[in-house]
Length: 110
Length: 113
Image 1 (cartoon, helix red, strand yellow):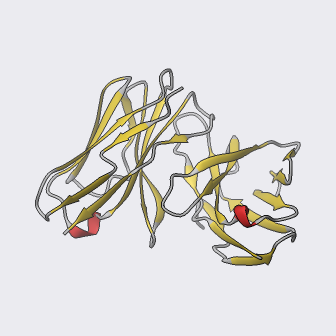
Image 2 (cartoon, rainbow over the protein chains, first blue to last red):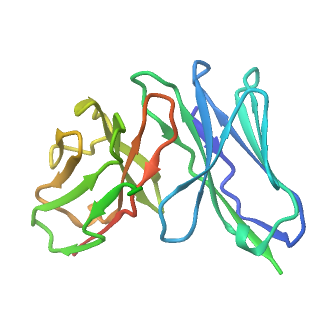
């Protein structure tokens, strides 16, 4: 099993739609989790951290399910500018390597 | 505040040549990471440092790759000799402490012909 797995997509959704991405991880001792956004030919940028209690930032909601070892990202009211690749990141903490998922590509269509 | 600074932005070189990529992390960050990104393999962690000490270099492809961090504000990734399959975007990232999010530089797009 890969350390971090994501559905590569692409997800093609109309403007205004709600879309959800999931990401599973194998290391049950992992401590911190993040979602990053990467635009074409750009560097990954932090979108939001993922907390056990779940967290929301505007149209974006992230959740963590430790029992099932997955994190999710929900985007409501999709905008054209949301088109990008979304990467989940698992950080085991301590001297263990940070692992990125392969990314899920989102294309929001007018 | 300045983010992670990488140089050069683009590098085109011929097979067999030495390539050196440079990175200046965010001041005060304890961790520095080198990643490589290709369409086929996504983002791969090559090596990371904590307080200038290499912690895990298991992702370094082979002996042609080496990385150093002589001080807290500078790191290099060297490929010698370079091969066409090394063509990729190389990212440097830094984080404040263990468990903190990573902040990426703009990357170096390497093309080996």
